[in-house]
Length: 118
Image (cartoon, rainbow, N blue to C red; front, side, top):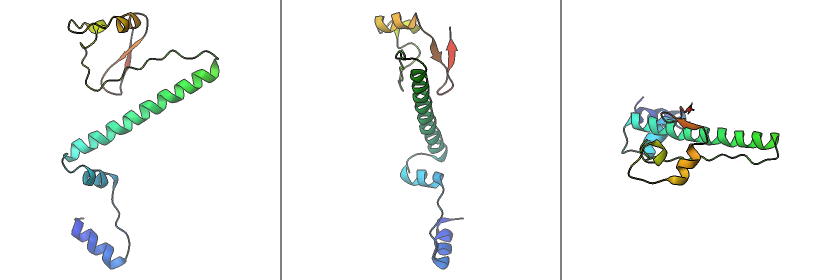
């Protein structure tokens, strides 16, 4: 249904227009294509779910023991796989991160689908 048809139907019935979440997002971000807007919406949702899940894990582990959990989350949106020393960077020196990385699990993978690397 086009915008004008929707407006005519709403005007004739006196009801408020029904607008989908996708249409709301498209109105807020007119410079992005439809697929980019959906990708952005999914990324926002995935980030929110990831942070909520990690918070839940931290709360549950803290309730199980009195010790504080040792969790370090390095989250960078523009870091490549060779931007830190423990992943082979010759350009950047990261000795503290290298030391930490040699004694912990490292989660790698495409965004939001991490896998444990031993």
